Length: 319
Ligand code: FES
Ligand code: ZN
Ligand code: ZN
Image (cartoon, rainbow, N blue to C red; front, side):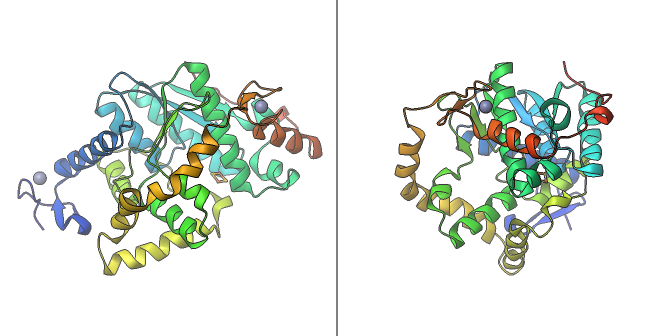
């Protein structure tokens, strides 16, 4: 197996590119594919201040590393979710990555800063854990970006993630979600723009990138995600990809090129709703008196008060 670029010994084969790569040229491929996605979807300006949503997993650490390598000013933001060992370990990986490279990592902790955690809070609020988690992270990332004057929030969503979400949205014809499934969501109504620069890389590739770059990432999946439909869609797409290399890429990128626009008009209408006003509790832009996150906090903390004593001593890394 030889590298397509230099004919040296290859370390990875990428069937959808019908090519093998040595370590050096594979890393270059990852950087080039990320730069290509940024350009293709006009995700970032050269002088944008970028806030990377960091979980300690391979994708978020890879995208932070690649953006830094590409010369972007990228800081990290980590949210502690209070999911037992999983959260402790994910925070450890995020903090260590930042410290080793001298990068800035801001952290927030749901228990310490908002009085609830995902396992107990979602139960009290009668929401699925992943839904309460997603809502909390979106809100806190937006707030952190606004507070810190960042131009963009970057997440580590890769091609497998986006193809699996697309599959779920198509299976159920969630046309409103299809309208929003873009690698770049432009800034609107007080929310910063959101970009997914890894959409041209699969999770096998982001894992290989981390290994070659000696990035120590959290391998465990979130225990709350077990049985999640998203994982089943990923497995189904991997089966298809095995027999038809490139199918995943075509499914997602041809959707963007040939079908996404058809769902867009409704999306634009809902985005331009004029009645966005500051949340009465936290000041975030919202269509209601109270934003969804403040409503979640109220329900999550009212029904099951959390004892804060054991979390107060936790380390906070920020600069
Ligand atoms: Fe959010 Fe698991 S990471 S529920
Ligand atoms: Zn090579
Ligand atoms: Zn609010």
